Each structure stands twice: as structure tokens, then as C-alpha cells.
Image (cartoon, rainbow, N blue to C red; front, top):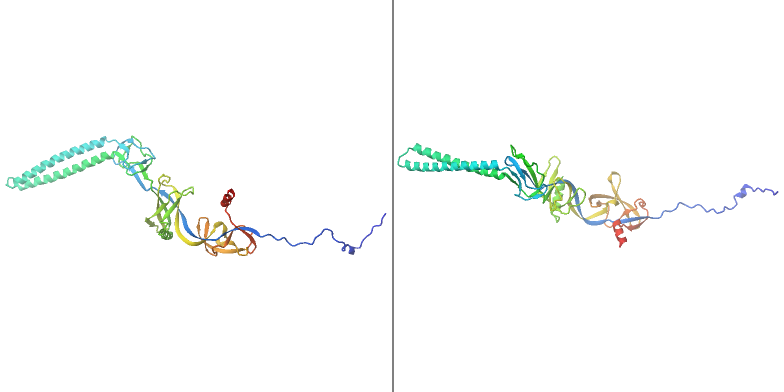
Length: 378
């Protein structure tokens, strides 16, 4: 049995601690890696997208101008027809009979006119020798005038009958695309009213009708005085741009007094008939051109309370700095900065959450994903 030795508590404090290091302070975070783009000074074209609808250049309603039974439809629905092309034929038999009757009435009127002319001539010769009375001469002269009027009326009736007979053959008044036939063979048309037979729409060129404020119209006209010459781009319902540019027609401008909006019309070529009346689209209209405008990508801008805009920039000492900016219009994927930023300043694109104002950062130029993938392929 060995004796157990007890050391005083005061000596325990003198024993060295084994394997323990003095406590260190909190670890220092490395500088945040960020990417930047320089604020650009460039010429920008301010555009505005305005909704509207496609409208045909000309619309003609083909109607029956005479009454009768429809005998024939001479076209295929949905095709392009030429002006003067035969579309329908109405039964001409009653109209032919009416024409023949008018011709007979004219022949009778011509005979009566010739007799009245001879009587008048004879009475004029006899009155010189006092062989007839003055009253008989005046009566013969009146009869001549009546016969002349009847002859003119008969001529007009014959022309009307010939026109009606011609209307039995219904032709296209304009060139364009014809829709469906509104009536079928065997139908009675033109009885009491001008029956609608079909509709023809001229589609090349074609109109686009839209509205904008009267204030924007002034800017639009000022921009059109330059080199762009009131050009307009059409955006279809799926967001794609129409391949042919159009032009704005300012000749038919009218302002709504209640809303202050202006009705405008643009004209577009439509050779493939891709644009159809009634289609919804948007017109991208040039509003103004600004020289040396400061622009930044939209994703570099942060909106705070009240819509105040701000960006983070990299200063000359590679520190992140908060900069309050004011923005104007949007052009493409960029904001136009009206104040708070100078051309060439490095605006942070990626790394906003890591970079704090006043903190040191490691900046690198921003490279878009499309450019990066292209560079990797090469």
C-alpha cells in the first residue's frame, strides 16, 4: 500500500497546460469577387411599343344590284381575285325580257318623234301662207316637244335595262382576297335590298391602326424629321418582329377630345399575306434619338423605397461604392441614366450581395454567357 499524496490547490495553478493555444480574434473575410461593366456613352434610339390591330387597305362588299335567282358561283373561296373577275351569275332571263321591252318602247318613241317632226315642219310651211291657224301650229309644236321627251325617256329606260342585264353578271370591284360566299346557288337575291354575296379585302399593302398620346405625337414627328423617316417595326402576337418595316401615315391624324389620344395609321407591305385584318400586334415606334446618353444594363440597377435607383460601382482603389442615380427611358435591355453616373465608371453586374459599400472587392470585366460559351468553343 502506497500513501496517497494530496497537493495544495494553490500548486495546481502552476501546472503547465498541455496542447492549448491562446484564443484568436474573428476570421477575416477575403475581398468579394465582382464583375463590372463600364457605363457607356452612346447614341440611343428611344422607342415605344403601341398596341393596335391590322386593317385591310380596301374592303369591298359584293352585293346583288338586281333581283333574281342565283345560278352560278364562279370562284374558289379564300383566293385572290382580280378586278373585273366574274364571281356570280344571276338568272338573266327576266332582265333580257325587260331589255327587249325597253328597246320596243324606244322604237315606238322614235316613230312618234319622227311623225311629230314631220307635222311640225309641215305646219310651219302652211302657216306662212295662212293655210292653217296659229293655234294648230302651236299644237303641232307642243306635240313635237312631247315626242322628243318621250324619246329621251325611252332611251334612258333602255340604258337602265341594259345596265340591269349587265348586273346579272357580278364581277369583283377590286383586286384582293375574297372570303366565303354568303349565299348559295338557287337563292333569291336582291329582292327588296342589295343582298351581300361576298367580301373582298385588299391585303397588300396593309394598314395597322393604333393610338398614342398627343404629347408623344409631337416627339414622334420631330424624330421623323431626321434620318429615320417615320419608320415603324411591327411586333406580332408571338413577340417576333415582322420582316418588312412600315411607315406612319400622318395625313389622317385625329385627336380624341375626351382622352387626348391620337389615332394613327401605319402602312406595311404584305406580299406573303402573313398579316390578316383583325390581328393584334404592337408597333415599335421611334420616339427620339439621344446623343452621348449614359446607359447601364437593367440588371445592374436596384430599386429602393419609393422607386429610387442605385448602383454599386468600383472606385480607383477597388472599393465598392453606393451611387444613387436617376433613370429615364429604357432602350433594349438598358436604362438611360440622366444623373448620378459618368461614362466609363465601373458598374457592378454580379456580386451585389457579397460587396458592401466601402469594402474591398476583386473586380473582373463582365462577360455575358453567350460570349463566354462562344469563346469556350473557339
